[in-house]
Image (tube, rainbow, N blue to C red):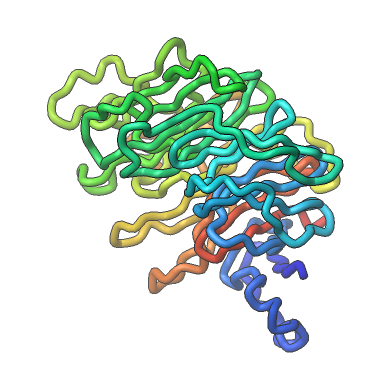
Length: 383
């Protein structure tokens, strides 16, 4: 059963009649009544996937859900009448959270490596067993455990989080984004000194790959800003400065930050980007968003564990090509984006959910995962 909440610029609870008629098993699939979307949109709960993290969607509407567990789930016909989730592949390299489609395969980022699984789109099923094609974290499995993957222009991008909050890494795969061929060969760093780039998003119009990064703790209050940047547009190996430089080449302890690349977009400190998707320009599907969203980025912000809690949300960053419409304001990290899905945190700082992965469907719907509720939501215009 698909639970639906229609919102016109405000929050509406489910009617008592609908609640009375809903079967008991449907209660867990309801959209939290506090969630908000802009006027003219509606949000629905389409699937229950425990520990849901990154999302990827195929042209036929198959939605792949990476998890913090040892499996990847699939929801078929996500743009229409979604099927019940079922296991697409068991990787047993938890967290198997990173997912990306390319070359007729699903790429999966696990704790110790990157795997691919053949994909039979006609059968909506895996074709063969998972095969590991790259190894990461060979010397230290601790610290940040997620591996995010993206595919663009026949290259595979692999983001591996740091082993610590602030340290000098000895493992050359940690705190980097690696670039490789689609078979995993030729892996080498494309971005370094990047603490935990969990959110990767491909701009289909330009081929650029953006990274949303969770910054370090224990700096000055409300810093560092979380960064969002198209790392593939920079020449050579991009240096983001962690842990000795941050933001606009600010040193932590008098370090030389002249070679560090400042980001094109920022979010408030501790907002924690987990997933991102760039809405394709020219999309003409049944559920295509209004033109103002074309080419812009949707970013799932998980919220903080710091007190007071920074609220989770899905943000929208208007872009012109690979440049934000608004330039970075180093005195205000809220200038470049606006909230698209809100209501994830109540006034008492309890939470209704925490958004993670984001994907855009072939007909235009926006899909958002929520690992606190184990849910996948679908957002589309109300027309």
